[in-house]
Amino acid sequence: MFFSLLNEGGPFFMYPLLVILILVLILIVKGFLNKEGVPKTIKLISSITLFALVWGFLGHIVGMIGAFDSIEAVGEISPAVMAAGIKISLLVPVFGSFIFLVGRLGIIILTWMQKD
Figure 1: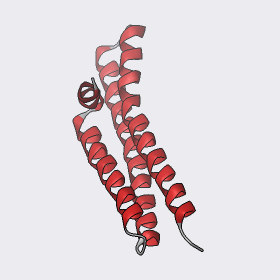
Figure 2: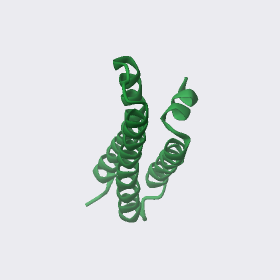
Figure 3: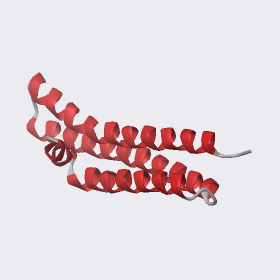
Figure 4: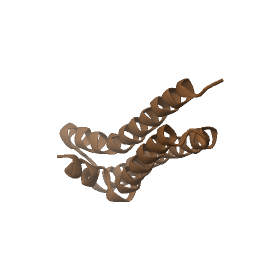
């Protein structure tokens, strides 16, 4: 199920996001284990998750441009086909937003655990 969604959303955008999710999770765990480098880890997680969010929306925009090109070439399109295309184009920004939220939650926890 998960890998079929990755393929549906477009491997060019979804698989890098999967790698970014794994990287963010590794950095969060690293932040828990290595208390000395937490501020640098927090900045890195922040930058990477923001990139994931923007990458997801870039994937959405590219997908919508491709969909509109296809609609223009065909002429008429059924509402069901249009709805399926919109659903597929929304998979990438949803995954990017999920990664952003996971990273932000990790940042909140790491910041909360820091000693003053």
